[in-house]
Image (cartoon, rainbow, N blue to C red; front, side, top):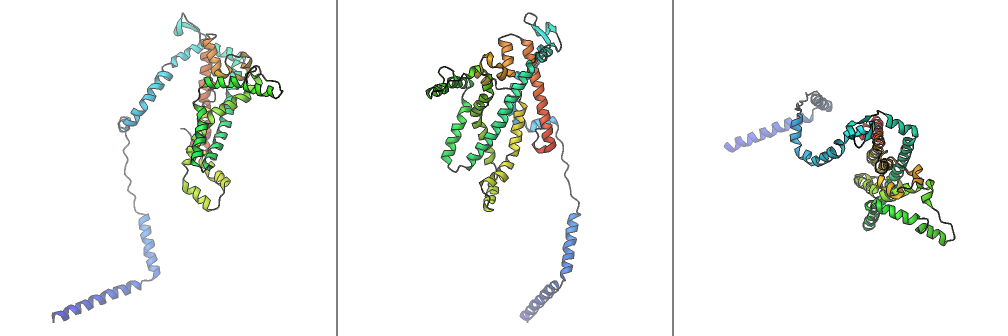
Length: 358
């Protein structure tokens, strides 16, 4: 009797389950869609709970990032000692400096030192040479560095790639003194290597150390030889950082090497190129003193096309002992360079704010 009751209950439960399932299957599709839409609307209109973020004070931020600040401390001390403590010396540019009177007791002459530089035309020549040389260094250097970095990326042999990088990187570590010596042994009028080769073929030697027009071509070539390896490694590292999945997808779609370079590599290098150009343009009035001084030296015949701001300041201090003119040129260089950085950064910020420095 008990088994019969249990069997009856089981049949009843099964019948109820089948009835519920059949009724669920009979629900029209439109009603189901209506319920889904209603659920979506309720989700969309549900209030979003935002957590209030407490703004940290300056002291709390310093405490939170104390490790990073300690890592930056040596650099901050360096710049404070060598860049900010000497700043009061700028006052020399506005005085008729005398050793026996010192900086603060020398006669104040206002802008007469600047007036002398502009009136003689010396400042225009120095600015022209410095800017034109740096423009050549920046434009030719970056183009060649990007080109070499792309070639290195396309080389499949790992060993050959590393040997090539090492050979190109080596000139970066050669001091400017040795570079000046190498250039002199190449172009010396009497026993230089190039003149010896020319004479061995029956030609006449050339004396570039008495020809000012030769150096606007030679100095950029020497600078390219010395700096291209370092810059190409920087760009090559940026290329290696490109997502490999993008490159592989392009290969699957049938893109050849030139299409990969044009549509993937060059656009991905845009940010790196802009940042490096901004830094380079910021120092457009800062010449490579070591290279110019060790190659040109005190050869006054070449000053018209090779004299830059740094070499003029050095001669004013060490040869003529003219501290006021040297300080005036240095202050002019700093203000001009700062203005160029601000202008270039503003232009970049208007075009694409993501690539601006600040």
